[in-house]
Picture 1: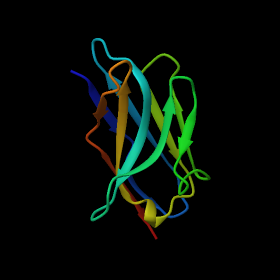
Picture 2: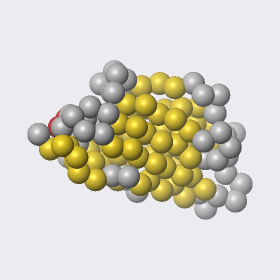
Picture 3: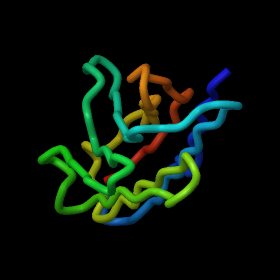
Length: 117
């Protein structure tokens, strides 16, 4: 019964910014970590950024100088601030939540981000 929902996708010109949001919900759900992955057509899904309940963050090398991940202190909610966007950032962005205890992964439906040159 865990649901993960992303929002904030859309079209933006190169050099612009976009902010994605994600919320995981469920009667007994509590996240150990939440993060973002992305997948472009014909390419494998790749890691973008993640944040644990402790606040520890990790970024893919391709985005670490431009993207910032953050989370709500008490809710299973995560944000991805994307700055200095490049055409190669174009992809479907998926939110992932890791359930505390079980370490089970839950995925959102994805939100499309298109960066035009």
